[in-house]
Length: 177
Image (cartoon, rainbow, N blue to C red; front, top):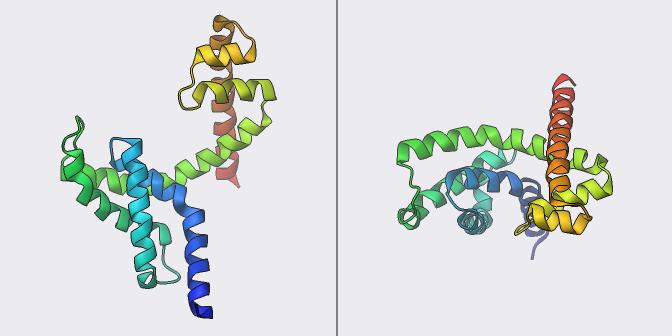
């Protein structure tokens, strides 16, 4: 492998690693099922790798990758046609254009949430993470934290409000900066 090919691969991997969450968010906004979105992200990633030489440095990588994702979603629509929720092309295009602008905002929200979660007491953070992990529930979170079910519901409500306020404040501070 030549030095040029090595550098190209490094650039591709850096861009994919940095923006994969944004690309996934865009795809997930367009398809009704998370597993389908994950499959489409994999397919999109393969196409991005195959076509990376067509990407022009200095242009918006996320917009370019989302355009590839858009075409993959369009091709996959036949599969989704059997689903209960199917959007016509006009709705899909409206969602796609909104999703591009929402990806950055969601990224900022995710970072703010991670910061705010990090500020919680470990017992509270564990309660929240147990509740929202795949397959998790309030009952499991209560049991694992040693709280009664009623106390867990109250603590979760208090923590959701606390996180909401923290994220809102953090985003406002970033917007002012």
